[in-house]
Amino acid sequence: MSNQHISSAFDRDLEAIQAQIMKMGGMVERAILDAAKSLETRDVELAEQVRAGDKAIDALEQTINEEAARVIAIRAPTAIDLRLILSVIKISASLERIGDYAKNMAKRTSVLSGLPEVDGSQTALRRMAREVQDMLKNVLDSYVQRDAELALNVIQQDTDVDQMYNALFREFLTFMMEDPRNITPCMHLHFIAKNTERMGDLVTNIAEQVVYLVTGETPEEGRPKGDLSSTDLSVSKV
Amino acid sequence: MSNQHISSAFDRDLEAIQAQIMKMGGMVERAILDAAKSLETRDVELAEQVRAGDKAIDALEQTINEEAARVIAIRAPTAIDLRLILSVIKISASLERIGDYAKNMAKRTSVLSGLPEVDGSQTALRRMAREVQDMLKNVLDSYVQRDAELALNVIQQDTDVDQMYNALFREFLTFMMEDPRNITPCMHLHFIAKNTERMGDLVTNIAEQVVYLVTGETPEEGRPKGDLSSTDLSVSKV
Image 1 (cartoon, each protein chain N blue to C red):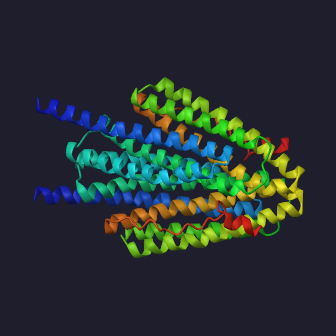
Image 2 (cartoon, helix red, strand yellow):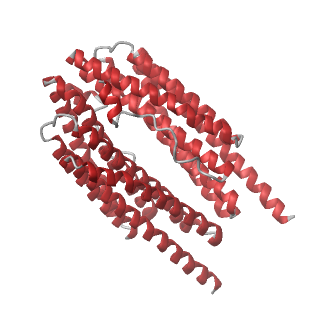
Image 3 (tube, helix red, strand yellow):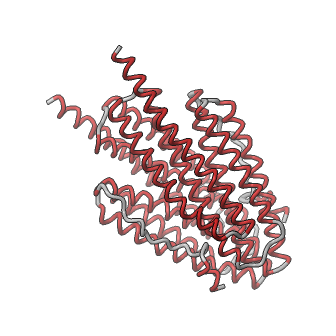
């Protein structure tokens, strides 16, 4: 009976923390979309909002960590429960980093506003950001529903993001070679593209954790690695 | 008496995990140095060793996480002890990511070997990598010695790394504008420079955790942010 009580108290605590994770996830999704929008529409004010909003995301991570530590201390969960509560710490850390990348994207809006536009790149970047936001939404759903299959889909979805990045990488090189005035804006845009690709990797990390939580096994090493810019392959295309 | 026993058993467990953190840190330091060396000397074989070695770093993080979870489960530490054991999880996660960046640097060695050399850049990158390795050594020392002052020095040291990055960023833009043949190698080199700057940020994160562990307070927000490439400042210099 006492055990039963402890267990359901733990469940309530865990649910409360998970609700905060979902809240944090929503804030990060918003930040990604707004950052990409500010970039495309050269909306410096919106970019400033994203930058300012990142503080709230950081604060929420801190709260989640403290809450998780408190639950561990008072409930002394074992085995699977402990694994669940520790996953909260890891997932919130990944969300915080995705938020940082969104902030970084927003930061570059004001710089890019003062530079020549590069044909359609901002639109392509926004499309890529939307895909990452969709991945994030899906992975958070897979987390609360403990749905390993959905999480595996997210891992698969990341290959699309990687392909978008590879296409952009080649495009930027071409633009820069065509006209040196494109070099500075393309350096910044490439940066944003790479950071967006990294957000996708972070979402993939979360998806891998969900798979581990649900099945007890890590998805196999052969996870699709789609960024080819560090291999000869993409360079040979230039 | 029984309490005493539990406490020292916890201390032994914690020390054992910390020893693994130090081991992991040593492996990551090695990876940074070797990756930078492989880049400068175009040593594809050494680069391959760094890539292969990253698996052992990842495995050690996994072991540390499991060990930390085991200690939490059997010792049910409270307050400060729990904070100590949770910090182990965060620090090993940062080390794992620094290892990933080193692997990424090594990966680009083979691509860059096939491209024209860019005046002195690889040497500058290696110097930057050495600085980050030195920061990492210092932060791990500050961690085991619970030395907040040393940790604060590391945070300060990161501004040097940021300055090195800013100088390289401007250099790459100049090289690319001078000669379009420099564009492709400079894109890769800029990448490496940025990743090295990020490694410095991750070491700084560890330093902030050490400060928090020792003093119970987070070092103030006003942490020096030296990467100016996302602000107008550095761009206006180009």
